[in-house]
Amino acid sequence: MDDTVRALFERVRQTAESMGDAAGVTARAAGKYAGDLLDAAKLNMRIFDLSGEINTLLREIGQSVYDAHKGDAVDDAALDERLRMIDEKKSEVESLRARIGALRGSRPCPHCGADCGREDTYCRRCGGAL
Image 1 (tube, rainbow, N blue to C red):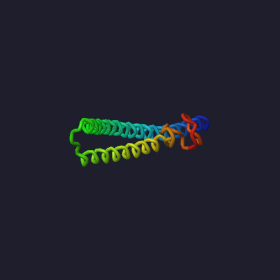
Image 2 (spheres, helix red, strand yellow):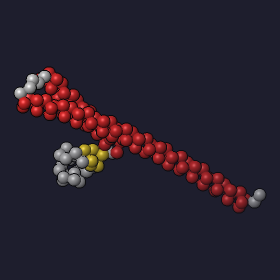
Image 3 (cartoon, helix red, strand yellow):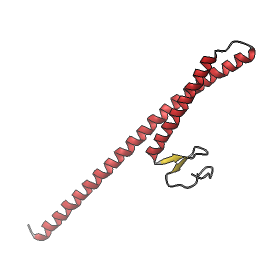
Image 4 (tube, helix red, strand yellow):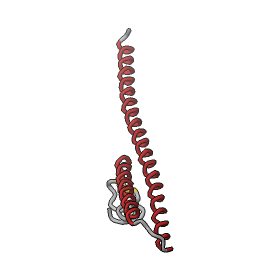
């Protein structure tokens, strides 16, 4: 085999190795991105579930308030427990939103809650300082 053909085959081999390495890097990045999307979806589902639980507790509290308005007896301990549970669930929602923001590379606006980039100085929705 002549040296020109041998050099051509060597360049083809090097290019193939380089493309294989690039494909591997791309596949790993795509896998990480897909994993992050899946994690964010799971966290969003948990937020959805917690929001439903919070709404149920709020309805129960509303019923207790109405019962008190009518003059019926209200269990203050049960009311306090429901309020405590709402506080815990809202705290968990905030924590989950922070985790989603970390996965997306964003942070919530302290004024309106919109997702903002890590490097943003002002919120894109409300204009508040970050």
